[in-house]
Length: 75
Length: 532
Image 1 (tube, one colour):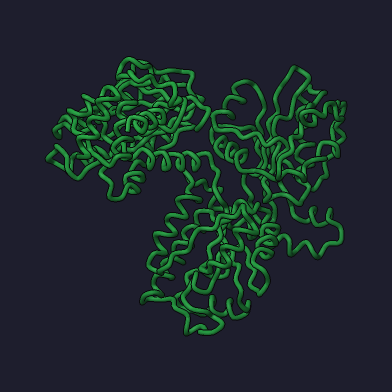
Image 2 (cartoon, chains in turn blue, red):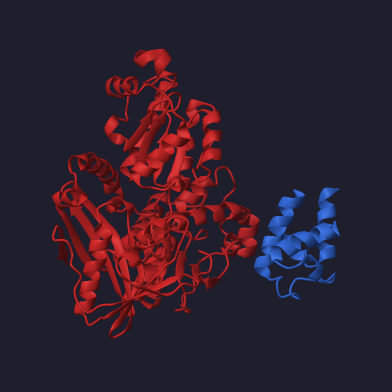
């Protein structure tokens, strides 16, 4: 799951998957700005077939949180 | 679109829609305080403000209008401006009085059209069009609206990219020219040779009415400059009788610019038609109900577009709308386009009368050819750019230019000439372009020289370049540089400059020429030049 999220992230940010640090978070990486965040959410929703609530979208600021939100939806 | 810098004025978040495009920067929301100058394309992409009452809404639209006027005053005059129309995004809105809102939107859009007429390089993009092709998809995702000020659902970005690319291609004028049509079960139901005129399905009841509607759409397409030709396995006499006599036949013989109605291989027939019409196979769309024929044409002539034919006749309308949008949509229909159909027909008339002369010179002399030469101005720039984009065969360098490139040449002091050619058969409109770059007081370089295939075959290409070089000579020019850049299609021009007496000065990466002149070229007197 984590790898999957990273792959989507790499596509959305147009960067190499290997270059994404595990502790990447919203605001601490030059690519992860508000527009890319929005694009990332759209891609995650379509890939995993889920719909996030605004509160979740705001909380999905690092990979662990993203994975957690998706898993919660999938249960 | 690619490799150009683009600046988008917007009132909502639209970044996600443009994620597949590079080189784009965005204004702040409703912000026009920063108007960059070094930009090739400005896009004015304002959407209907949602969260406003009626009075405020109308005020906002007025404000947008004034903002746009200011932008137009300070933006780079030689850059493109694309103006998106306002579209009521959702049936639901915060407003109550719909009539006044609608009037305000109409007035705003009307103003955009006026601007587009007055400012060169300015085009209106009907945003309606996009909304229509999103079908049942939710246009607004309210989560993103409230969180990110995004009006158009970011999930629609792929759909938007495809649509916007099409708009842009249409603006750049790279469209197909000709539809190759089958007859049986394509223009009418049934098989003429078996069912007879009375038996084919065409008329007021289904499926005949669907075929009739399809013919109507083809007729409209032909009026907009699309060439229609028939390639059908049938007996020609029977076909013309049916087309002439069937009461519900919309398309008549004179709507077709060429035809091959015989039992030969369709690929061979198409090859001979493109030769007759002087167009490339890559400007054709092939419409045939037979999957075998489609597959064969797709294999034999891979440049031809071969769309899948619908399974059921009621799908013909949406099928053709789709084909038209994909391959024939042209941003603004020039009167040149409308004339084109007529001109191709006149060209075949010319070919017929050619037979009576034994010397081609006598024939050409009898055509009463007049060539109107004109330096480019704002009225001719769009057509000049269109010709550089579309002309493949007689094109020495195949440089593709936009309206703004042409404007740049003019403002840099280079000469951009267009020529319209008339003869006893009609007016061909602007069909030749020459761009001469001034290198120094006595030297120029022929940057581009091209003729539309419509006027080839009458040696106008020689007469015209000689005339232009004579004009340059009068202007103090005595050294003319030129290049030939080979492409897959311009082989016929490979020795053009050699034949004119130019000397090859370089061979790599392509041939470069120099010609020193000390007197006028002799131009045959039957080409009559008028300098406007």
